[in-house]
Image (cartoon, rainbow, N blue to C red; front, top):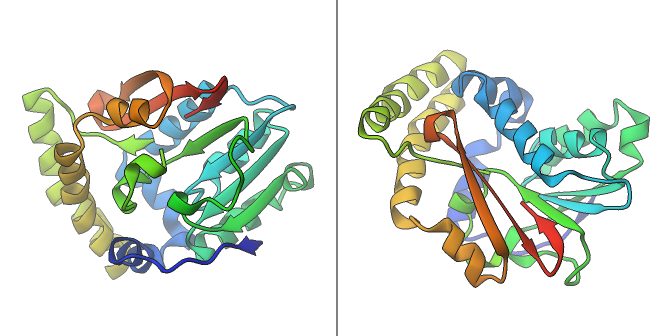
Length: 232
């Protein structure tokens, strides 16, 4: 596992602190808190990329490696998993190393999305999940949570994220309770502050930007193409 060091901003330092004690139960709690939708969203993301054996894919904010592992299972020739959390990447590495055939096609790098330690046009495709709320320069980074647009669904979503998520988190641990309290306001605040994510992508030079809202709008999947190379 290699590292690209950079001083974290307060926003990213808070994210690191918030999730530092969670990697061991992150996958299970993510599935529980999303009523099983999180794994479905991740599978849809990888399916949209259509990775091939001749492709090198960068998985940014790789976390515990759920998308990374799915990318190589679906046929990606090489995957670089990048995350700012060494603890998360250690879990990702342990996951991939269970299958030697997958492990030989994955490299792990500690780094930040805004300062990728790679030259331009180094990858055929890029994926990221749950990243944009935690970076300072969103246009520099390019699967995020969404907020339902229909008023009744939005009200139900708000009730669940404000009451249900903290309750589920409290049953798991004090650390997960804090995550449960954090997620709802964070997701809704981001949606209000950045209502035109496709516009951000277009300004960054990504064309043919499309989006798919899943699970009544609670999951947002976006993809586009830059200079002939897929990016999701």
